[in-house]
Length: 311
Image (tube, rainbow, N blue to C red; front, side, top):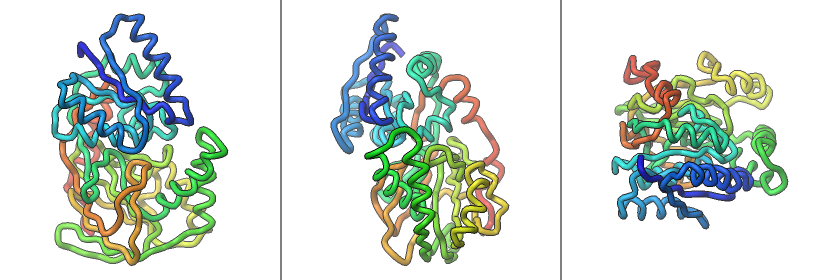
């Protein structure tokens, strides 16, 4: 790429993102690179900046921040063919982890300079684009509680405290799920339709997910008490939970979810839209700039063996 345009969420990662981008920008200037950048100033500003960049013909657009910033940028790049890069300078960086990207200023820059365009999947939840994971239930409670702790703490501590507080107030809800015309009901604590494998700063909710397989991995955590949840949690974090009787897991291209109460959705760590919701995969809709280790991750054929498990 002869020119890069960066969309920078300076407050991501408890303010680390802005500092790290300045370090990366200084290195780019030293190398004589052709680049430009803008800082975001609020919700959806990254999406608007990305849309304007596509209109004026930018050659490559790079999201600087966390998963939420990447989702906003991606929402304006889906099906445009414009390559997207990521400087993963947020807190959780689950999407970047799925892509094998380095999480430091110089490492991220080296990844970008070694990258080539690779098509990956995106997804929709109703009319909202997401790129990593979307769902409702326990993960939404974690986001609500994490945001409260972010006012007092930095780093991964708010995530851990948010999980602990959510565990103390488990809220099961009844869901109806429809896949390929087949419907089933479940009393659930969590429902996630995943493009990538991890969420909430590294919890391996969908261990067989791949970003280029044309499928969503659906994980449903069935109703259970706090002791049962605590016993399952270590396996859940490590992605070893698929054999548990408390888990329902399958793959699909489109899923309809209805719930006994209107439930807010988690979209890549941000809250938006609500049930009822239709989740849908968008195969190859996003062109990502990936270094060699990222291309290797996207080449995984673990989930290409079947369209989905039977219900």
